[in-house]
Image (tube, rainbow, N blue to C red; front, side):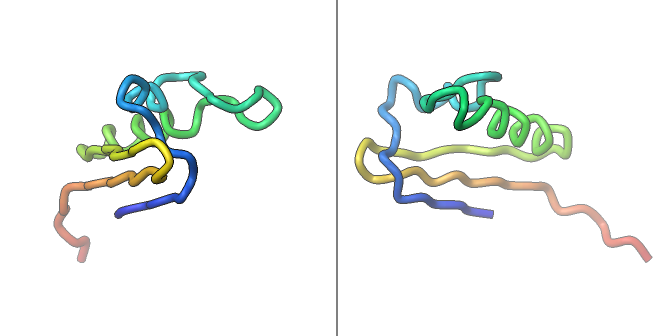
Length: 73
């Protein structure tokens, strides 16, 4: 799954920080900094990965890859 936004993007020095608990660039009343950390935890628990590509002023792209599992009968 790929999700892209057209926000302000991220500089290389903080690109991995959004996956840390409680990291936020917005004031506390606009978020807790849990969303991406939780998403990475859930994806990882299912054997998947979540990656981000971003450039300042160009938005961010998040890619989630989950392993294929056999279908249930």
